[in-house]
Every structure is written in C-alpha cells, then in structure tokens.
Image (cartoon, rainbow, N blue to C red; front, side, top):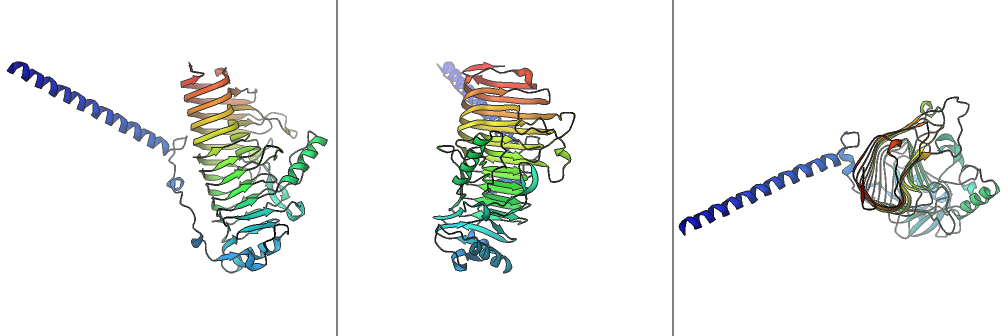
Length: 458
C-alpha cells in the first residue's frame, strides 16, 4: 500500500511538472508570437520601422489653436440662401493679420464660394453648423492647381490651404459641397458625349490642401462634393481622424467624388473614418503621362497607413492610380468593407511608367465585388508621341487575414506591359461566386492557408 501510494505521488508530481512545462512552453511560444506580431505591426512592408508619430492619435483642441474668430462677428448672417464668401474670407484675413487663430463656423448654415486659409489659421465647424458650397462655379476662381496628375489652372475648392503648415479642420459640423447641380451638369455632358473627360464640366472640389505639413483633419463630415472630396498635394505628415466622407451613388450618382486623394504625399495616417462615395474611397495619385517620372511636381506617395475604417459603397476601398508613378509602404488594416466594388485596385496605366510596391492589406472583413482587381487602365489613354510603351510594376503585395464574401476572388488580367511579382495571399477565407485564379500571371506568387469556398487552394 505504501509503495503504491508513493508511486501515485510520484506520478502526480510528474504530471504536475509536465503540465507546468507545457504551460511554460505555451507562454514562451505565445510571447514570441505576440512579440513577432508586435514587431510586424511596428514595421512598414519593406521592413523599415513605423515612426511613433503614427501611434499618436490625439485630437487637436480648440483652445490650443489660438484666438477664436466667429464669422458672424465679421458680417456673416445666418441665411443659407446668401453666398457669404466675402464675410467669411474677411474673418480669415483678419485672423491672419493678427497672429493667426481659428475661424469658427457657428450653428446654422452658411453658404460660401472658395475660401483661402492663411498661415496660422484653422477651420472649426461647430456642432449643428454647416459650411455649404455655392452652386455657382463663378464663386470658385480659376488658379494654378493640380488635377488628375497634372499641374494646371483649375477651379479652387470650397476650402483651400496653400502652404499652411499645421493647418487643421475640426469640429463636429458639416462641410457640404452642395454638388447636385454639378452632378447633373456632368451627366448631361456625358449623355451628349460619352467620351467627355472629367475636366470638361466645371466642378469644384470640397477641400484642397497643397504644400502643407503637419495637417490634421478630424471629426467633421465632408459630404456632397462637386468633384473630389478632399485632395492633398505635396503634403507631409497628414492625419485624417474620425472623418465621415459621403456622396451618393443613388438616386443620382455623384461622379468622381473620391473621398481622399493623396497626391505626392508622405507620412499619412487615415484612422477611424467612414467612407462612402461614388468613386474611389482612397486613391493614391502622383502624375500621369509617358514621361511622368521626369516631370517636375510629380512624385511618390510613401508611408501611408489606413486603419480602423469602414467603407460603404465605393468603386474601391484602396486604389493605386490611375494617375500614379510610385506608391510605396502602403498599409490598410483592421477595416470593415460593406458594398465596395473592389477592396484593392491596382490601375495599370499603359501610357505611364508606374511602380506600386510594398502594399499590405490585412485584417479585413465584409463584402465586395472583387477582392483584388489588377487590369490595364485605358481611360483617356495617350502616349503623346512616345514610340515605346512604358512598363509598369506591382511587387511585394500582401493580402493577409481576410474574411470576405465577394463576386470575384482573383480579378486580374495583365498585358505585356505589366509586371506583377512577389504577391503573398495568407490566411484568407473567401466566399466567391467566381473562384478561379491564374498563378501564372504573377511571378513568385505564394498562397498560404487560403480557402476559397471552403476549399484550400495552392
């Protein structure tokens, strides 16, 4: 009995040691995995460290923006039917002349044409306030600008900031482009000439920010743009936080109302936003044309993080192109997709040399028509006399941890001028009406734990 009891004690002790050892191994493995994920989370796709700037999502505080200047103190009236550009611009100019400060749009609806913010001035749209764009294009002067990958004269936006470092737009109010008349004019022109370009119908953007560093847009609602909703050109260190971007796709389509167009920008954080527009939600631009990579003013978009966002109807959640020459270190993660036409769209423009590299889309769920769409983009194609067709490259593209219901899993069809390489699909669970794919279109294509319609593919 004593020998049996002692043996039981030994067995129990061995079992305890075994369990303790297994627990220790599990904890070590979990710690290593967590460390690995953290390290991966702190790196851009090319392996470089993500600066701490990206993890600082503190909101700008009204009281820290300087003296407040309310537009009604400078002659603006609470009358939504009167264009009050002069009174609002007078407020901005006065603030700029007196050391800067924040221009307050108070409760009510105030209509305006193009407004130009000056150094050290900011825009604050109060709760229940609406800054509404004029429906008359004459209220938006033509001036040096940037549109569709070209530097050219174009109509000013409703809100403009040229060379205003530290510019902010904040508040819980609305900036409304009042775009209906512009949309109708566009579709009327398209009916008259199906080949008309986007620039043939005069339409203003909602927000245009050019050559500004350390920009922050937060909390406001940007809606009903006449053309692109917000356009950032040659900007560095831009944060767009908890902004709601909307323009309708029915009953009338709001054409070309891209939510966010990044055009030669570096270090951009888009976080906690809702985007639903009748075109691309987020488009990365930077120049177009057969010699676009040599043209002054064109350039790369680098170090872009899009996270914790929700996408409603849009032509694509994330698009490279169609006017882009180089996009690098692009991350879209932790996002919900609802009714997007595409999750990732790589527009391969055959009249423009392009390179899209180190693009990662991860931790995505929802539904879309296509998971990934890569095809030649020939709208308004023009080699401008160039005899050879420039090559375009997409490489080091990763889709990871995606649970999606879609119409088409692999919407890719390249031309002889496109080079796709080093694609990784990892941990995908896809339900697709069209599940076929062609690995031969991509050089060095890895499929790791990819299920399409509950079948693992390799």
